[in-house]
Image (cartoon, rainbow, N blue to C red; front, side, top):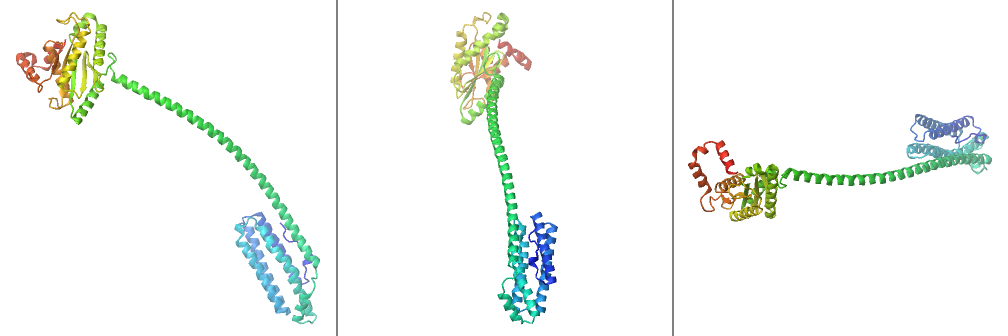
Length: 443
């Protein structure tokens, strides 16, 4: 980027001054080219060009000031001339310090240095040369200064030429700047179009992704509901007796433990009925196991139908045994419920000729009650007492309800079993014999 073009219009007639001026023009142009090539102005070439320009300007100004002193030029001119030199040094130094914040330091150099160089060379330096010539002709310093100050510009065309050069340089700079602006604008438009297209694609993708997420979420919700339902069904299957369709032994054990805790916490009675079908082995031997299964199903359905309070619970305990949990029910209520169940089963008129007296299927029921003054102090003891009461119902003739009555009244069941034990000591010597006697009694 050529900032200043040297012409003869800048010639002062002072040999070393003109040579130094030409060198100054070269260095100004070199710094402008370095700044244009590297706008960030952190390149070594830029630094070197700046230092060369600053060193030459300082040296040139020093030579000019010494020349004026030796020639005897009027002090007024010397002072103005020296201040102009200092001003240019300060301008170049401030430009260099602020270069990092400039968008185009080369343009700033054109705006600052060129006007100074044109004005200083064609005005002050020409006046200096004129005064030196007048002094050599014998004029005094004061007279030479006055004549130079009032003289018409010796080279008006030179000023116009320099201004023309400056105008052309500015025009070239403006054209280059306009071209860069156009290129940058086109580039920004292309980037804007690309961004718009990308945003549209992203918007479509976001919409598609949102739809996919919504569909996936709905699918997962349906799958979760199906899985929850399946888990409930599996839990029901796991807790339900496959043959009778009522709760199984595992479910009963869990429910008994939970109801016992609740009854103890609320200090409420909890009763248990243990139901066994009388002479069921004979029934199976007579009619076959399929008929026995149907008999058990009918009885289970009848029991479940009659025991219908929200907290009541019916389950198969094992084989032909059923159990009924009766929360918040004392022994009197348990006996009443058991008697109703006995009547209901007998009224079903299921034929059983080998029942040992009655020709219909009947059940025996043992009842126990825990808490609130009753003997059972744990869930296991409640179950054991119902089992003992059931054994007594079998022993007394079946088709009846017997309650475990340590504190309810009548002959205590504990005393009953002790009496039975004293009447048949040989039958009660081992646990195996006990089990055989109980199994026989439950037939």
